[in-house]
Amino acid sequence: MGALADLRVLDLTQVLAGPYCTMLLADMGADVVKIERPGGDLIRSNPPYAEDPESEAYGGYFQSVNRGKRSLELDLRTDEDRDAFRSLVERADVVVENFKMGTMEQFDCGYETLREHNPQLIYSSIRGFGDPRTGETERQGQPSFDLIAQALGGVMEITGQEDGPPTKVGPGVGDLFTAALNAVGILAAVHHRERTGEGQYVDTAMYDAMISLCERTVYQYSCDGDSPTRRGNSHPTLFPYDAFETADGYAVVAAFSDGHWQTLCEAMERPELAADYPDAASRLANRDHLRGEIADWTRQHETDAVVDLLDGRVPAAPIQTTADIFEDPHVHARDMLADVSQPGVDAEMTVAGSPIKMTETMPEPRGRAPRLDEHRAELLEDQQSGGDPRPAESDD
Image 1 (cartoon, rainbow, N blue to C red):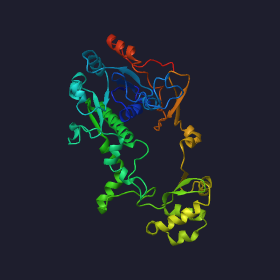
Image 2 (image 1 turned 135 degrees about the vertical axis):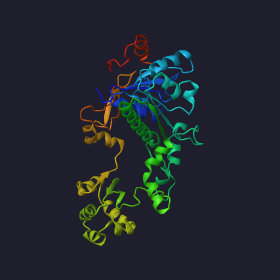
Image 3 (image 1 turned 90 degrees about the vertical axis):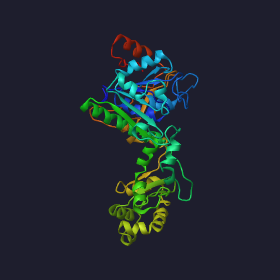
Image 4 (image 1 turned 180 degrees about the vertical axis):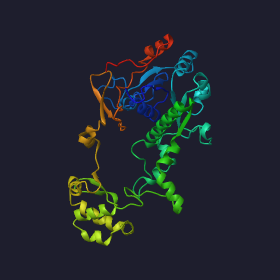
């Protein structure tokens, strides 16, 4: 039983941000019911597949962020399905949606309406620009994706090489960081309800989340009036803190403290550098010269040799590929790769494990993602009979 085993979540989200948020809750034991529109989540058919796209129920994208959930296909435009949804709301704890602003109101299923059916309901939305209930702006109602959020929130302006164009961060942080913050907001609202009996609306905007993610740029601009921009892999106030080319790849070195700097100079057999640049201010003032000295040293050694020479005394690491990650003993010891069955073929797919670790109620992927409408009978029939429509034990 997970820490959230008593929590029922109705998940109307699709694509990435919303499903990742509710996936975090499912990994911690929440009963997450994925309410899917006719035809299902837009990313059900997205590749890659384990073996046979024609046979498999969905691809890796859907599997990764919808594992451990149950599926119910409903058309909220119809009276019958709208009534079924409201009936589920009456015994739910949380509703999460990431529709365009006003969509749920068009279905007569907005927060104010659903709260009449369940006064203690926690209703959460993830949108590009938030909801008017928590702060109205002219951007609300505009479509948004990860790329838009990264562009507006300052992520792209500070990402990339100094002489290169603004660059999107590889992972969809506009979606994923927003999702993680939304999960925190939901759990805070659950805690508030336990103390007061009061439900509430939780709202997380992608644009807002990216400003929070770029918190360093906010205080920098506040202090000196200059807009931070791209610095490659370096840091504006710490040195050395960068990626360096080696004989066979790249390694990162973070030796900005005085002690780490001295140890790095010892490993480089350059004690005069430690003596000439003994403090952070002198190293920052001469960063271009010192970067060249370190780069000359790293290029003489293979990546593993650089890391071994620093021997855990200085923060350093190779830049790994995903193949390297799959081979790393740390990753396996921490259960950060999880195998789940792939319906339609006799195969499994590996997805990222839960980074949240707990000693008594360890979060983990709780089975594969659902087939579309797979749990209709157990959800709606139990609902009609007055039973508790909790998930039955899965056979895969």
